[in-house]
Image (tube, rainbow, N blue to C red; front, side, top):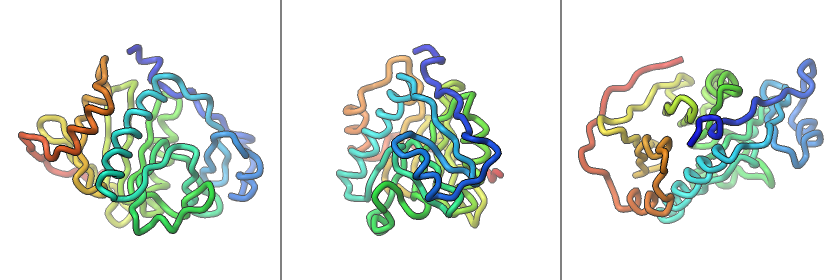
Length: 222
């Protein structure tokens, strides 16, 4: 699949010089996809087919696993994560444990998700890889996945006292989540020219631990 189909268009700030509260953000954007980051409203351009395909693939396998194991809920990008009155990003995907489902409002969750997943593009790289990453750490988000289809790279971090520690991908390219108990993922599935079906992948993950697991050491990152 061409890399240009796997990117999101650059987000737009509206207007860049003003600061908004969460209630002002909600009244301004209404049905549009947007994020409130440090008081700034950032509008999202329409998603590309490649971005929707990758998001849908991850959503399916995560939902299948979490639902079968009765672990919690997977939600998509139209649900805001209200961190405080000036910060309400809308991550591509979020996992919320059963014991935290009471934190949901009508269109938002109050507080960080247990696992937050963003799919980046060159146009949103700084927003996702720097600004949101820092914001999620500050507010105690336990786990952050950052997937870059353009560079065919994926990064996974866990939060230790407000600092991100990179989580390992093993020697055969498999990532194991710390907060979604038992969930594992082959990173190369995300970037395959012919991605395996989400149904077959969900079945493999639900079947149990992959063979040949070898874990490497953790690295602390800012």
